[in-house]
Image (cartoon, rainbow, N blue to C red; front, side, top):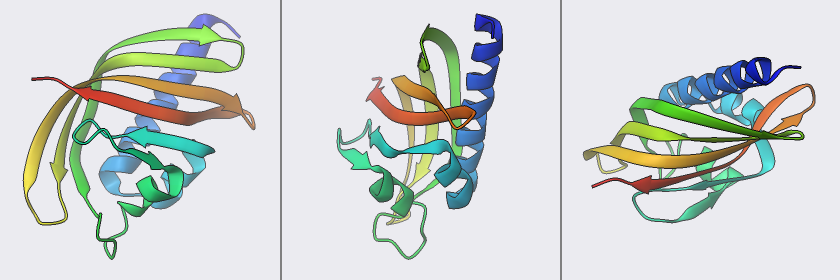
Length: 130
């Protein structure tokens, strides 16, 4: 598989992850996450486990939030055997549990691994931009 083919496959998986996060589609997210997935929030620096992060998409959860917008740009890819690291900029619109809304601009590092014939996300870590 060429680097271009791998990059397109990771881009496609990342887009599915973004689409599922915007839609609050826990089932689709579940298919894209590794069992040891970690999401580090740019607003708090808190690192959520896979289950804690998926829980924010459940309306009955006290941590429930929605992402009306979740976009990435300026992507750079690095590949290692079975691993892709993606660097870029992100923009999110977040509706918090109390109904307050924030817009968040970040830089991020995102790690993917090739498993079960596809790409799965291992980690997302973002830093808030001023």
